[in-house]
Length: 131
Image 1 (cartoon, helix red, strand yellow):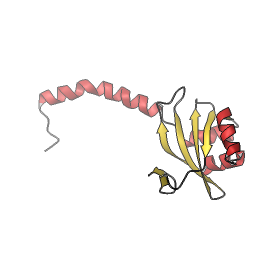
Image 2: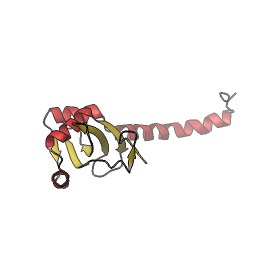
Image 3: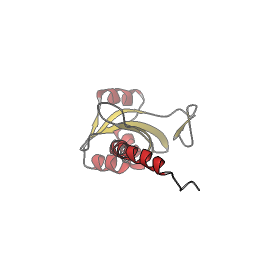
Image 4: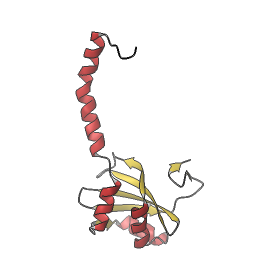
């Protein structure tokens, strides 16, 4: 059975467990949660970067569209290695219009990095998976 290990194998794996635990801890601490994003939005701790502001105007996306996207959205991709803060891609809807936003969270505030309407030629499964 695969449950049985030789003593030498157990020793080999136990040496790597502390490293794997630290790796898991780092990875899970860099993951953004949708509830945190919603809470920061509800508390008024949401900031639009200059880049996002320009893109929103170019793409006719309003602040209300962003709020609706967050309220109806779900995180579809995590970018935990982004700098200076981890970020994520949120897919949500505003008046049946699909919207993607990239946001980062510093623990107190949400920062909108960009916003766009996803292209059906590049996305599948209700705009939640890349083709």
